[in-house]
Length: 254
Ligand SMILES: Nc1ncnc2c1ncn2[C@@H]1O[C@H](COP(=O)(O)OP(=O)(O)O)[C@@H](O)[C@H]1O
Ligand SMILES: [Mg+2]
Image (cartoon, rainbow, N blue to C red; front, side, top):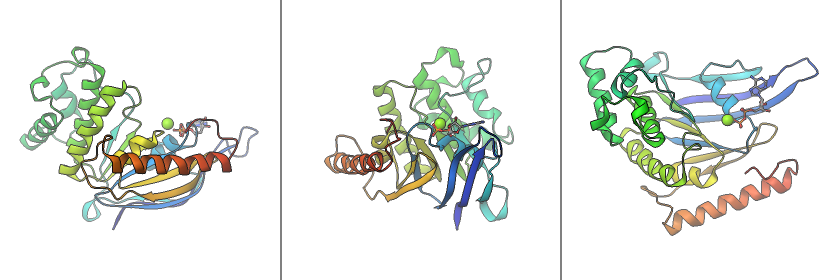
């Protein structure tokens, strides 16, 4: 059964006013459990709006969306944003416990397990201000996985980091994902990153339509130095160049 179902979804900001702006235009796709799906597209094409609708922060204008939890229970969502959004006055561990449903022993065990997976088991008592940006983002990722979500939503989580740190975190994310196999919807404007991480890439074009839905069938772990990964990255990039040619209003954002 699909964890996420999106059918004929439309979103118009300021509908009925002079500023009416259709951002999502009849989007339909399903995401099965245990898959890593990336939504790729140039800045302003509606990626964050789509995530906000999935998470319930934003209403949609028409269409249908559902997120399914285990055995009919309400779906549990996890989030990772561009900024780690840690509470500065709480320790790393307490930041992670804060979003757990309960503070029982099992929650503590989950928190420690994921802290260990991001290589920060010795930093549980540190405060966010004592960590680098990359380490803080690792806490953000561990915090989201430790909730054991039915659906994990990630909105350009590496876009504020330097290239070397981002590369390290992508490798770590692959590692955690291969252990946990959570269902992930990952937003990025970076096609190369999407090919490295995903089972599937949904390309959004400006105006909020799906341009392509691409299966990525490469063995894991994937490294950018791997020729098969590099070849597919080039191929997908070429297809997006095609999108730019077909929609000339797209700036050189992809
Ligand atoms: N709350 C809002 N009110 C009005 N317009 C919005 C709002 N949020 C986003 N938009 C507009 O929707 C479009 C898509 O934005 P966004 O989803 O943030 O794009 P992306 O994440 O792909 O960069 C942009 O034109 C943006 O200005
Ligand atoms: Mg965005």
